[in-house]
Every structure is written in structure tokens, then in C-alpha cells.
Length: 504
Image (cartoon, rainbow, N blue to C red; front, top):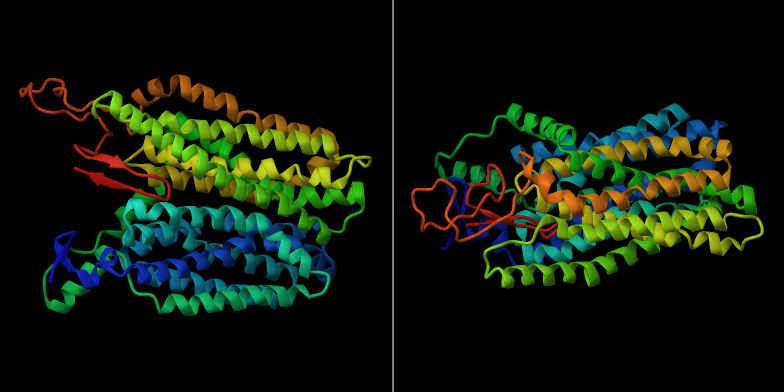
């Protein structure tokens, strides 16, 4: 029987997820994809039933809005906890604990006797359930090579960005006819089904499978990694990258603003459309069909235009340099620039169109470019991070996600005060001007990105293959260098959602 190397022990094909049948791997992926849906949708599903909750508990809008902010705030910590635990004990138990806990806490939300119980249940559901957000990438890496992962990542991207955008729509459609407790009960039932399916999945984490098989066969293997070292890596490396890498700092702050804009609009849209057109909160939930359509269009633009363009440019660089040079990370920035154009266009459009004399449909359609900007920013920026920091991309993405979730937690509570104080025109215009900051930032990175990379401890440097290493005694030796600190002679080929492989 052939076998595949994993760590210090050879896994047989039956235990190597890469060797499983395509049908089996795709079914596992389908279940994991669906496990993200209820957790991510519930981020904003709550907004569509918020009016019922306010009426039921006789609470103020500012208090009820905390149900969105607290949930988002809790999702900062869930992935940080689940990720190292999955490396130690396996993906399967991490998935099961996350989804079973989310199911129980969603039930507690549906049965809450008071607004305080509801808010606490929402926060804990976000904490426990959000663990799945940090697990799916590892599962895809366990089962698929980078080429196979590319279409799968497109599906996961649509889910991760589209689900919270679409969340208010079903709640708003059903809210006038179905009590909010029954709607939250539907989320609970959905999560329970997914939890049952997750319990049937096999383990895919290589080192965990290695230890398990070796134990069954009485073969000594390397000990389980020290959990303190894993926590140190998970918690402190992202903070270090965020504070000491200017590229990470500024791009993360802008991305956090763009991402938080969705959650600000969760509260701003009901306020604006009620003030101008007399629409109820349930009716304004349908407005989010526009940014959701924009999310889908953003994915189409990326995979039909930007990704082929990047591939052609990469092939051109390899051809012109006779294979001696790699494409620079800055070639990912056109997508960032495009996203930073679409988002302010949408917000300026909304500022101009949000007027009593303007057709409401004209104002609603302004959400399409906003949604496109959100998706294009996520895909382009995260691919840029992966190309820029081959050995630290996971930490950079973790830092980015944490800051984004902080913005998503705070922005909903700022929406109504902002629009009430400044007025609809001024508030929308301020947001539009702030969203313009991404374009000059992208231009600066295009112009000076190479210099900034040269000053970084972790960033990838220009690669020249075939020239002697500086100071090398062997002038004829081929030199790859320096691809990235700590990487050694391995050139990383990776893509967000097509992911990383190290090629000797």
C-alpha cells in the first residue's frame, strides 16, 4: 500500500484526506460550507426581527441594537480559541463543539425571558459559533491541493461576505407574519441539523491522524505540541504584525471601515428609509438585496477579470525574466484600488439619492457598488497579504479579522446618532469621503511598496533565481533570495482560498 508522509510518520492512503475520493471530499466540504451559513447569517438576521424584539420587551432601540454589536464583538475571540484547539485535538471535535454550542445558545436566545438574557445568549452564541470561521481554511488545506481549492474558496467567499449582507432579507420577509422566537427557532433547528452532520464527518487534520494511527499501531511519534507555544503564536504574532508593519496597519484600518460599513448600514437604512419614505424596519430589510447583489457581482469581477489578469501578468514576468523573477505582491493592488472606487461611489450615490423627491429605487440601487467594493476588497487584500507575508500570512489575516470585527461591533451603535446629528446628506457624505481613503493608500503602496517591503522583517522580497547568493563561496550556485525571512529555499505559491504550498 502506498503511503503519504505526514510529520515523522507515514500515513497510508486510506488515512490521507488528499487521497480520498473526490465525491467524499466534496461532501465533507459541502457540510463545512453549510456550517458557516447559520453562524454568519445570524450576524444580521437579528436586524430584521429587531423591531419585534423592541416591542416584545418594551426596550429602547439603542439597547436592542446591542444584539448586533455584542455578537460581532464575541466573534473576535471564537476563531482565536478554535484554531489552536483544532491543531491539538483535531478539526472534527472543534467543529462539533462549535456547532453544538451555537445550537444550544441559539435556543436560549429564542426562549429568552428578558432582553438581558437575549443579549448575553447572543454574545455567547457568537463566541462559540464563530469558531467555524477559522477552521474551514485548514480543512480545505487538509483535503485539496491549491489548484483544487480555487473554486471552493470562491464558494466560501460568497458565503462569508454574502450571508451577513443577505441576513436581514429573510427576516424582514417573514417578520410581519412569524413571531421572532419562531424565526430564531428556525436558526436553532438549522444549526442542529448541521451539528448532526458534522458528527458524522471523519477527522482530516494530518498531525492528529498521525498520532492516532501511530498509537493504534504502537509506533512512537513526536509529542503533542506545547499549547502555551501555540497560544503565544496565535495571540501575540498578529498583534506584533499589526503594530509594527505599516502596510498591515493602514490596510487593516481601511478594510475594517469598509467591512463595518455594512453593519452601520444595518441601522442607518431603517432610519433613513423610515424618515424619507415611511418604510417599516421589516421593509427596509429588503433593501439589503442590493448590496448582496453587489457581493455576487464583486466575486464575478474578481474571478473573471482580476484573477486572469494577475495570472497573465505573472506568466509575462516569468517569461521575460526566463523564470528568474517572480511577480511582485503589488500586482494584487489593482483589485484594492477598484474596491476603493466602488465603495465611495455607492456612498456618494446614496447621499445624493436619499431625498424625499427621489425615487426610493434609485437610492436602494446605491447599495450595489457598496457591496461590490466590500467583496473586491476582501478578495484582493487577503491575496495581497498572502503574497506579501508568505510565512506570516495567517497571523496578518487574523489581525485583519479581529480589527474588522471590532468595527462591526461598534459601528451599529454609531449609525442612528450619526445620522440624527449630521443629517442624512452630511452623514452619508462623511462616510463617502472616509471611504475615499483607500484609493490614495493603494497608490502609495503601488509606488513605494517595494521600499516598505525592504524595511520589513517578514515581507517577501524580490526573487532572483540563478544568480549567486551574496557572499556565497559557490559563485555558480543558484540563489533564491530572499523569498521571505524564515522560509529558507522554499518559494511559496499560494492564493486566498487557493492556499499555500511550499515548493522546493
